[in-house]
Length: 451
Image (cartoon, rainbow, N blue to C red):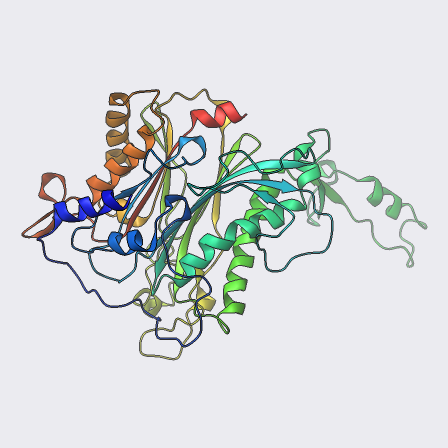
């Protein structure tokens, strides 16, 4: 990997760096870092390789080499650092295969690697793609991909990339019995009907009937009959709720620990969880996910920015001049420009979660889920990304598991462009992305095989 990175640097030397090369914002704290800065663990980079990859002039594209252990489902991944706006690459990524076991004891408020869930190592020198000690039959396999785009420093993105998956696992532990046994009926929620609802449209539950039968009708000591509707909660909604709760817990953990650790800034979060035949795509921020199926684009996320949530922020014009996203993790110390007003109360850590049922479709080898930070989407449209992928993959050996990594590399190259005398340029001499860019290309055909 080091030779590959140095070679890329040598090939692109000679340009001029765009933007500022100052240190990360918020790095002046005397508190220790919660986790040291680095690149995604699955890349398996040494300290020298991390340093070499941070060249803002050459901007080498990092990919998984053929010699390293591949990500699950032969997922492709590629990334590149920004053109100089921050010292560190503020994007972070993580990918793991995990095993969720039924909760057996008390709660663990701060998830860690010693929790009751099992995981496999995704590092090149790990134990392979098989789950560790997965002989248990009282749990569920879970696949996890994530992207975090930091702002005002990389601290929050690094912390979230290490810990968010453990919060998701903890939330799902409560649901193992329900989710793995289709014979167990979903829980029931009793919702009281409005008083103006007609009697014919009400569903009288047994409990409500018994309450109404006590005492004589109209008696002063008899409470009025209450009518309730039974609302079944689908298993899918339970998983969505667990993911939403995990995001909230992750944000609360960052808030607690910022008093003892230097956790700079905040970050957007884009997460995919594969569970029991379905993909759950959770997004808080301006990263984006799309599915490309038979050449068709299926959006799997919405961007949350001051522009898209203008109605919610209509009285907070100054907020829009301070931060570019309205949902994400962290930002607990961020204030409105030139004021002492904290912005956090007006931001949300709640993600939008969309669900894609893999069992409803038979996917081909060129059907993929694309996850990318805004460095890609700022310069390429959904349709341009789909055209690039559908043109690239058919030209690769269909039996080459590295084809999806090469497709991710191609997308990063298209968005970054080539350094010319007028900066980074892409097709039609348009301005390329000067931002950090991170891209996953996840083949959906492997999801069908898992199911």
